[in-house]
Each structure stands twice: as C-alpha cells, then as structure tokens.
Length: 253
Image 1 (cartoon, rainbow, N blue to C red):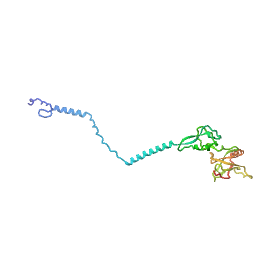
Image 2: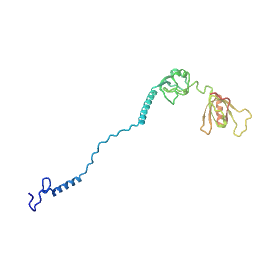
Image 3: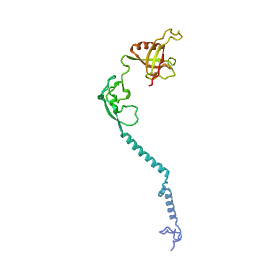
Image 4: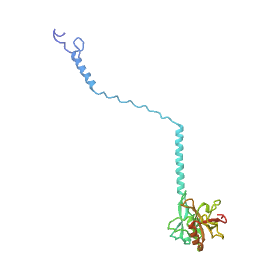
C-alpha cells in the first residue's frame, strides 16, 4: 500500500522511493560523497614498468676499447722491464781532495737504473782507466764519478799559468773558431790613433784553453795558458785592452 495522502513517501532500503525513483535524501548523500571525493588530492597513478632498452653495439668503439687496453698492457710491461734493468757505474768510496791522484781503493761500483739521465757517469768496467788520474774538483763520498771529475793532470801544470784575455771582434781573427789546444800569440798594440811601433811589439806565446762570452758588450774572453814568468806581464797588458790575438796554427782538437 502507498502512503497516506499528504505523507511523504518512505524511502526504501536501496534509496529508491516507493515509485522506483531516487529519493531526495539519497541525492543529497550522493552529492556530498562526490564533493568529498573532489576535495581529496588525487594521487598520480604509479608509473608503469620501464621497457628494457637494447644497447646498440658499435663494432668500431669496441675495437678501439680493446686496442687501448692492449696498449696499456704493453706500456706497463715495457716500463716494468725498463725499471727493472740496471747497470753499474763508479762512485767515490771516500772523500777525495782536488789534485789527489785516484787509486782503485777510492772507487767502487754501484747499481743504477737504466734510462735517460742528466748525469754522465763512468761505467764500472773503466775502473782501470780511472786509476792514476787526478781529481779536478773535491769529490765527496757516495758521489758518482763523471768524466769531468778526473784528468791526466791538474791544470795549470807546475810552471804554467792561465790568464783570461777579453777581446773585441777586431782584436781577434773572425775567420777561425778558437779551440782548446790552439797555439796563439798575444800581441801588445799601440793606443788608438797612435803611431805603429818601430820595433817588434811585445808578444807572448800562449795556448788556448777555452773561450766564453763576456758580460761586457760583444767581447769574448779567451783563457790562455802561458809560462808563469809571462803571466803577470800578460795580465797587466790585457787589462789596458791594448792587445790582439794572433793565431799561428789551428789545433786539430
């Protein structure tokens, strides 16, 4: 039976009115539920599983990588073999003063790694050649022996002296390059603008020991060896600048 006239229709348990229509209370509840759902923050959907990507194989890059690995291995093997190799050189066993004659007891062989070095050492098998030579400088214990550390005799020898003569380009021949061992004469010259000497000028025979550039102008300092008796006279004349160098013969060395 339907409701009495004037009474609202009762809602059924499923929210439908007696006549099968949606009741007003059910509409309100549904609207409120939709409003609450809209107010809630929507969670993003979880990302789907990533699709596996297939690595592209590049034969050129693979070959290059293998070549680099091979080169690295070869370099490591080479360095290990080089660093592992040694050779024997001569070293000073005890202090040796300059001018002392060297004996076999003064030197001993030491092991050195092979490879480039800024120091020129004397091989251990040349020990016999170093005996009876003279130390050209003070040698300290443990120091490596070099070819410049020894000489047949200490210069200058007894009765000889070395004098440095500063010469401008017009005071020495320019066509020949002076070398150690060249015999020369150092000749006294007149003052600039003066009259030439009427007699043979003062000249001192000498032997060239070496040359080096001067810090004054374009001069060259020539170290010459003379007798000790002529050393003082040559040094005095060289200080005036009134000297010239004459080459008598060019040495083979």
